[in-house]
Image 1: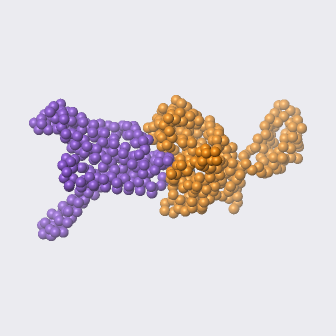
Image 2: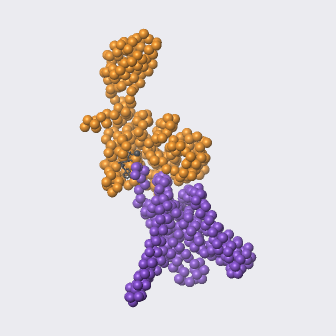
Image 3: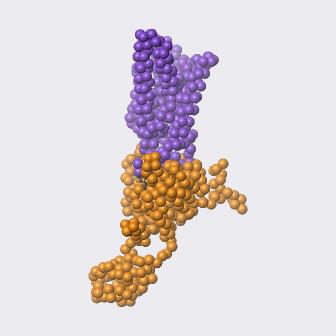
Length: 331
Length: 260
Ligand SMILES: Nc1ncnc2c1ncn2[C@@H]1O[C@H](COP(=O)(O)OP(=O)(O)O)[C@@H](O)[C@H]1O
Ligand SMILES: [Mg+2]
């Protein structure tokens, strides 16, 4: 009885869910068209329980293929995938996975609510909580209640995306595989998704997020994996603080001071690696790291510059992405 | 069996206007063509005016065409199978949904025809013929449904109809060929060989009929005739083989979400 394996009995005789073992992918290769197109090439990675892992890579790198293999839609040519120690197509695995596909497809005649209830029933959830559960999830993804009873064919792209996200959360999954969750969404939707991902992570879900929005990954994920030509090209721990060059934009209130841009150059020079640009009310500079940035701001404030804004010009992930592309060009 | 899959299959049918119109035509057709026409004729006075149980196959065809193929084409099947439901369960649910719905439609049709007969000739109100006819229809529906579900799992969209038509075409072609060979052989007196070709044609014909119209004549069966077990056994074999093969096909299929 595999279903009973989902729980263990602890010392006090209370049922507890089995500890999550994460996703272990070892050396999988996947080809299409009888071996002509190699989508995944000996790819190995591990998703630790409770972490949010970002997948980054150019189009055609094999990210969607990887997620499809994890879901058991595609069979790998070689290598193995274990999700909580089980194969991807085991019934037990399907109970603990939530999936948001890249290209969403719906039975177009269903209403949003029908769709949710259909999946709620398929997931084997109890009927008594069906209506409440589905409405709670639809509210969570901020799909307006007026659209719940409207046929899916009348939904906009962003609304479909939200419905798809709600579907992925049906059945309280332990793992969430998301393939570009924010594509086609308006700015509010993008923010809703980001907030949702943070909440879900706090709730203990393990998230595998494939997204082209680097800032979203940077804000949500613990680690990020760069995929290129079907293999992992780089793994980066985003929680680990590293000292590296910082590019900043600094603004000040020109109207509130008699100091000129030459004064700015004089003050900033000592702490900066380079001053790329100075205007009457803003400048772009680079410093050696966060310690240097602190000193720079201190110096500017001491010199009575009315600083209104200091912000990084690009995020860490963006820099990594750009650098990895540069390396490739020079190689 | 999965309730959600069954109910969704029925609701999807209801959402497709073309199918609903076809269903209505299929329902009214026999009533207008057989029952009402025969009402006035002398033979209608003392016989039940029911159409042949084989009518039920058309209901099944309407319900079953693309029942799995359309989900494959839309891509919705992947998310269904991503849920904790086995492929066997899915296929059997689809088969049951089609068989049950088609049976219901076919029974309703036979019931209407019966009512018209009874109005025409009140002594027919308690005729057992209608029960036998109805039961035969139900058996037929579930039998045909198994074969059509198999066809639908082989191809995507509504291509199963094309597959079926192709089947029929090949059969007709073969039969015509066999007959020509027979006619030629008769004229040249090589009767033995050509007879074989014709026999083969008949065999294929029987097979085709047994698959598409797994008709079990109930009255013969109930009379205790040993020969009547033949159709029952072939019906059960048909259902088992078709569903198993369909499960096998879907198990070995990949549902790609990546670019085609
Ligand atoms: N069904 C398919 N048939 C043939 N090639 C495919 C198929 N799906 C994906 N590919 C190829 O596999 C590679 C990886 O695709 P995909 O996983 O969609 O990449 P990503 O999601 O990272 O953009 C691409 O080169 C793509 O052309
Ligand atoms: Mg993709």
